[in-house]
Figure 1 (tube, helix red, strand yellow):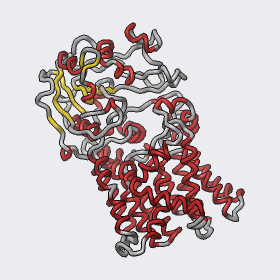
Figure 2 (cartoon, rainbow, N blue to C red):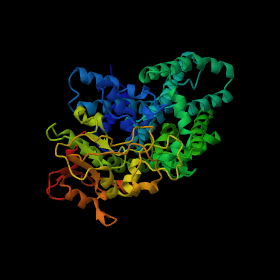
Figure 3 (cartoon, helix red, strand yellow):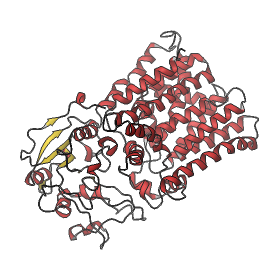
Figure 4 (cartoon, rainbow, N blue to C red):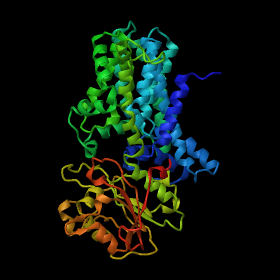
Length: 564
């Protein structure tokens, strides 16, 4: 049986993109997906406050997608190989290819088969799809299931079976990401307005699908956490509080002035033109409904203080479907039979490829490269390691897979939010305190000498949900409480840090301190791309105790040496 090109081509492209990607994008790719799954299968791995707080806000449903491949590797005794990293990447590629196929299918359903290849081209050449779609992010899988549900919706003729299938897929998208419900409530309200269906009949069709999905979600999470729990409620409640603002606050127009241009890049002119036409009803009622649907989550999410590009990723495939209509309609002479658009427009879409290669290979490559370098060391070479970097800067045990480093032998700075309603304007997490004065931090929370046996650090981070530790009089200005256990580190065998940390700060440099303590630089990542966060600028470095050479004799990681 011949496999249709709209199925095998996206799958091949997405697998190549996923395996070719060797860069860091967002911490959630690891700490809200791979780490919980790794811990569930292998018994160790890092859980953030979202999982360990009194009221956890994360569902295990999404990480559970990665449990089968991890478990299979465990049974086959292949978990010590690179298959541990490759398996989730291939699974992510499969989910990503669903988006491409669905865009192809939906464009053909609404506008005709001539528009399907162009919609597929837009999806495959999309910069943001390259950046995020093939990663282990809940937003990415949410995007795939959202457009798949729209693709299977009975647009042209009523079909109870097709409607149920669409609703079931939509329910999965909502279970993975509760805020996805905004899209579906809006969609079915729009459908109700445009159709002859009664609201009662739509509710009657939705209840038999939504109820089992919600009960399954509650059951999965209750089993995982060991008590009855509704994580979707906790998720919404927490994100509506000031806790979300701890991770950054943006202007109301952020999605319009930054989000959409970045999501659409070279397709933006066609997206805006087709979006406007769809809202005017030029393309028909179905396209108008899609145009309005894209506006609603964009507007609602703009009311939230904390914003991220990936939060609006689910509307991107919708915009690609609409843009395909405009691109084909603008064409007078087809570039070739299968892609009926102007040559200049085709070239414009391809201009996103160099930037896509950059984010796959160079932007944040050091955070991945250093984990591969550590992974190559045996148990005698690697006894302990500390990450003096902003929290969650690198993958963790889902990449390293070293149980002997648990219990304080591998640590990173924490960034617990103010879960006890502390004042955001004065609250400082461990990462902030460290970067305010790293020399003072080392002097306060590290012993005066290095123990060559490299014992585990007793209290390297604040347990999630706990109050911040007390500090000595030199830290009294931070306003943290007294009488609680302070952080307590041991000097590790290796330090991993960004080279921006090394220069002089307040009369003494971190580099001078490390050299004086007996550390020397043994590895650096090479160029790490252009970084907006000043704490993450420069190369990723590895310093080792017992090497008295400062920055000499350094191994440099080349792009070709950073294997997936």
